[in-house]
Image (tube, rainbow, N blue to C red; front, side, top):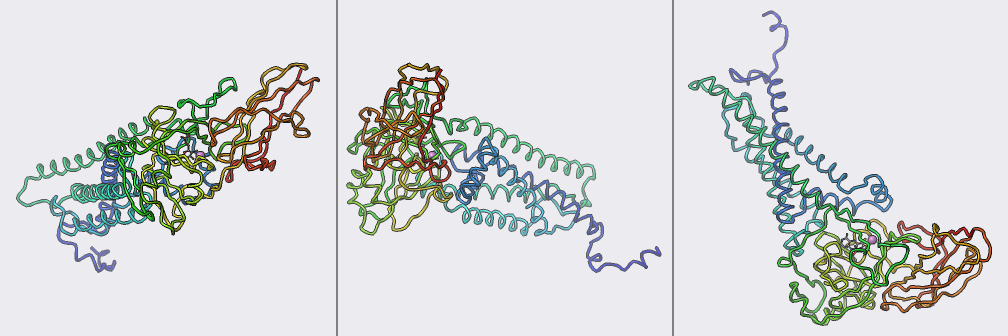
Length: 542
Ligand SMILES: Nc1nc2c(c(=O)[nH]1)N[C@H]1C(S)=C(S)[C@@H](COP(=O)(O)O)O[C@H]1N2
Ligand SMILES: [Mo]
């Protein structure tokens, strides 16, 4: 008794009702149960996110966070990330774990805000708890909506721009309301309860155990469900990303078959659009804005043209380039249906259902006579190439040829662009040429007549001349050009080489575009401005 007198009593202690827990104990128990409730709530919300993604095509906050990050980092960081994570799902997995952890820790904030005296009175959350839970849900929705404003208008089932944005916001609201609800009910259920005078102690204990077991089971169930949703999501992983144009025996056809065409995508999982939901919208500064269903679009006058597509990441003698015959409506024809663009429109923006977008100078784009394509080499546009609709803009690198297109917007200002925001070059593509034959591993003897072949490409400028050199660029010889498949396609060149002496040779090639400009010899890698310089092949003649 004597030490009670000697320790000064703290002010708050008398507030503890009879049978109440000490402050320390209340704090400790609240914290532990708040974390557990936070984790269960997080897992339930994650499950809802997964279901909304799989069933309604609504992007998860994790994917939007990924998109947001990609737009806010520079090329160097982007390349470093690519090198660090071999798969896009790894950083997304980390982001998901981070989000679950955040939701768990947020449970503490909730406990702090509701300040429930322990032991608690009963299982039903009080007004304050409901309000705090709701406030958390609304605040999280608001923060995510503001942060991801530009990432919201995307939907993997193909809902158009504005609808997609609304659906995503509603999805966020549902995610976070579920979070708030489970947190509210779960925290209450977990807390130790004040014994009720009339009740049987054993019954009360059993009820408490059941309630705790229930919350844990809910969390574990949601966790397992989330795991299942992740498995389903990952089973559709875009493993073909970065696939190069097939190159059997270094001989390629003029027209690349669909299955052999190179693929590049920003998405861990590409959209799987439902054309019944999808629309192409024309908005902004044009005389008659409008919208088309898939069927309506196909009733427009359409045309076919070979257009070669090259990724800006296509390096020396590389194969991120392909040529297909695209069928669809030309942008000019479409624009004519809408009275043309208004005179103050200077830019044209393309928005896609996967949240990808680009902005380009309107005049340049119209001059290039782009094609909005729904067929590729006679087949319905394959999913990985942008089903139901993509645009081909001759003269620009692949990154500015949007797939899964849903909206074309005419504006006075430059608005948006994923890769241009990172600092990738966004001008007309550089003239390139490539040597396909001969290649290093084929045996060549002095006196052989060696066929030389390859491609050259300069977008819509066309190719007027290709020269080859077998002495590392000291002397040049004109190659023969095959007729191109269109004015916007690559050109096949061929030549022959008769080495007279054994030794090491460097073969090289240079192209002249349709304007008469010779391909630059200045050597530059693909990042961030697109590769330049002459392609070389080293050959040993025996
Ligand atoms: N909507 C959308 N369009 C996109 C992309 C994308 O990720 N999303 N990738 C771009 C890039 S970087 C390239 S190189 C081309 C590749 O087109 P392909 O896969 O049909 O060859 O698509 C472009 N269009
Ligand atoms: Mo690309």
